[in-house]
Length: 107
Length: 113
View (cartoon, one colour):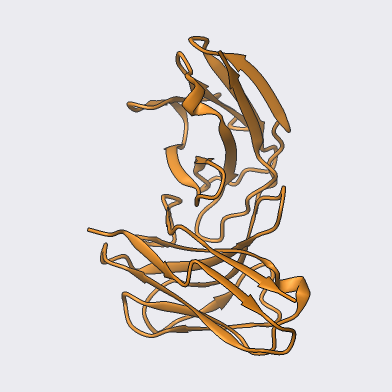
């Protein structure tokens, strides 16, 4: 299972775009890249998943370069309610959650 | 459509006691999972069930047993609770194990004294 590395914490202000980058140098050919969001006292919630290039949904965008050794989660115009921990995961089935990135959005 | 439900929400045990955490999903998912989350840490997989009738160990299976009762239900049993098992336990389900879109329950907060 590929190990992921992401920043421990990030700060932002309301209305800004936030980009969280995750590195996964040992990603396997069949691995997907998935991001989860977790609020305090709740279970993680699936945000977005991709294999290559760019994926966009109503919540976020996921950018994956051609070598797939990293990925960037982009949250457009964040609000206070986006304050949460964001996890980057690679692989399938047996998910390995790292410590995640604690995003703090300030007014 | 309740998604993934877990019971109980909170539990306090004494060292050596046993208990079973219950999990059920109503999304007709094939795969189910049990995780634990310790303060300030990410989730760690305890056991998972790729499909009804099968179970496999995750990262931290010691001290736990699981039962995939049917397609809907997946229980986690602590036979002899230890203080090191104090944690928040999350159950999750997914359509299949190949992809990563897992749906999580609200969690069970367990304290072992």
